[in-house]
Image 1 (tube, rainbow, N blue to C red):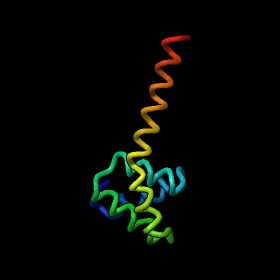
Image 2 (image 1 turned 120 degrees about the vertical axis):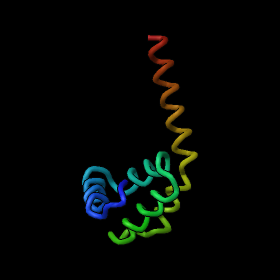
Image 3 (image 1 turned 60 degrees about the vertical axis):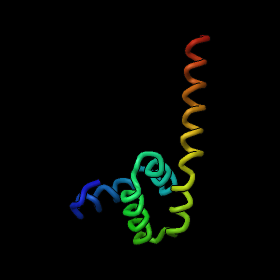
Image 4 (image 1 turned 180 degrees about the horizontal axis):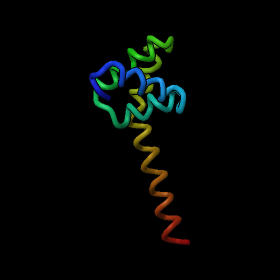
Length: 82
């Protein structure tokens, strides 16, 4: 994210075209800081998405991290034993 509005809006448009709202919000929950999450929530609110739902997804950060670790562990175990 950048403080320049044009870059931010362009990036947001790309996000909504390439990835659905849920996946983008979940990625931001895992990798973004609090100011980035607030900006993304306000951006989606302008697009008509409910802010409360976006914030709920941000709270799923722990679940997403845990799922990612399980998937990685399964890949490593599969590589070792194949």
